[in-house]
Length: 454
Image (cartoon, rainbow, N blue to C red):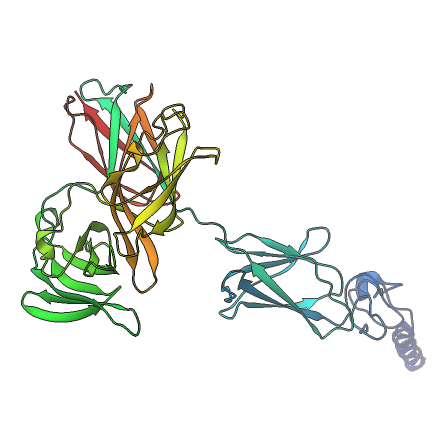
């Protein structure tokens, strides 16, 4: 009897185990098994795959669910300079949808090309930006079928770069440090110092090559003669005075001829070791540049035919107005005489006030008059040189300009529209000051300086 009982019990246990394997799976045990799927047991099998939810999932492809599994497209953007046609490297390309949501971005390479990948076919806004250029926006359409590249060519327009700067001089009482009102501040281009070049530099000859019209200058440096072309630099020179110990450079800026009957001359520019222009001199054969270059006095401001001379002040009914002189044309009366220039004076509203033809060694502020005969230019403008650069036949005028402003209640005198370079600000000699203030003006910036007076 006992054996039968044990046998029956074993059979019952086996039956229970076998029957348990035939029961339904349990949703929630973490295993997607048996009859479970994403619809009846999302907990174990994950969310159901739905075409149109924006996600290309397992089991979906471009054929059975193109809404999710779209074939990707590409966008090739080529960016060039609108003025030169040259490719622009480093332009930033941002792709957004119509809701301004970012979808992709890229940067142009050395060829000005940015390739944007994996774009769903729809309308996009593409923005191209680069420092120094006007930002451009375009609306391309990437259309099916995919795996194709839409091409876009963009020309970025360069921003107009500032060519002049401003200078603000503050005059303070040396004892109280309070601002002083009503002090005239005079401003000239150039710095102060003594002779600036120690190395002996002798100009041996200046000529122009007939076939190329290229200027050629032969220079003897410390006994050794070498030939230089217009635009070349003479390096390895030694400074003197305030520039003692510095390595100086002389640039042959231009070969000039003030009239067809006058021998060629050259404009030489002296630079310190930091690249700052120290002085500019016009000299001919036989000149010793080391006896000419100085860091003192007025330095000419150089303009070409068609340029505007800004930062000038009016008088005679044009008080407080910012005046402009335009170098309208270079002329030559009689065909062999010295060159002259036609200068036009405009008020701050762009109205022409007067037009005068003048030559070297004349003062424009003594020539410009109104219709009723009054002098109308307060700023002293001295015509230093007028000449033609042979290689380019470009007319050039060199001016020495003394600008003057009175300090306001805050002790400030503001000079606007200055060509970049070194300037020296002074006050009238009847005031004791801490000396002339030499400052550098940069394009697009306002430089500030202080003069103390007693």
